[in-house]
Image (cartoon, rainbow, N blue to C red; front, side, top):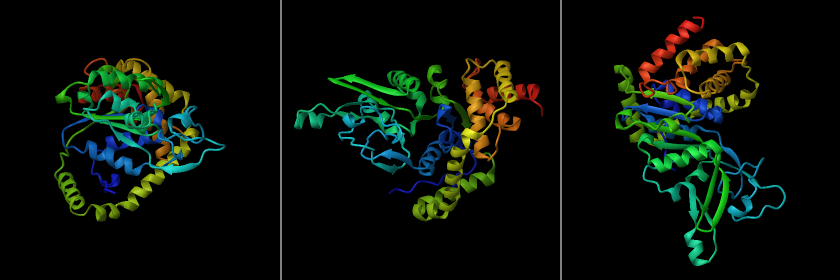
Length: 341
């Protein structure tokens, strides 16, 4: 198995790492959009997250990562197996699936299994990337260059949490609930507003400006490239601790209290900056709760809200949604005016 650069060994990029951890703790956040320079560690960080995620409990033999607590109705049909009594439960790694820019629609949603159709004369469903990503993460690098028809498809699935395939005599419906993670360089093209709004959190990354940080990045990357297994082993304990922290936060999440005063502050902030719709408030609520759970807090504080507000709102402002610096400045000014220092 190919070694993956450890999440704990990534230097800097604190906002990106925090946003991904919050999305891992609360899958209802709506995903993470990362804009930044080429070579700033976007893809490396997402790959590292995959190795950090706690494993899932799945139904053995299910190609849709079926949850044993709520198996899908037609699981026995689409998975080519029979369910007799309680399903057999096993553990599987949390999926982090890449969606290539050149992927066809059949590859994304699934299609007729041609091999079985030609050799056995049977109509069977060959699951696509959306099925593989269920209960995990779907990662799109250079998402701002994704073809429009795939963007429309993702919007439909993201809204419904279900993938429906009606083609070539097939009629298949299966759950497709995943955390959408996208990355891209704003200089190479803008992201469609409809898709941008589906991301719960938005962060901006850049190459380190501090000399010592740049040197440390190069040193660690060089050590990893020379001996990936040894480098991963050296950071295994740190990653294990972080994985345990994520699991503890997931268990604690439902018990974190959010007061009416915090909800009111979040809504006032959204109104002050002119955020479109109500997704901003919902994202602030969920992200604040996830951050409190991550840090072992029993309730959401004003300081917690201040930390998550920029990444929850910067892409929802009516003016310059891709101008992260200006958007962040607007949000920080509004927080200084509305919230206690």
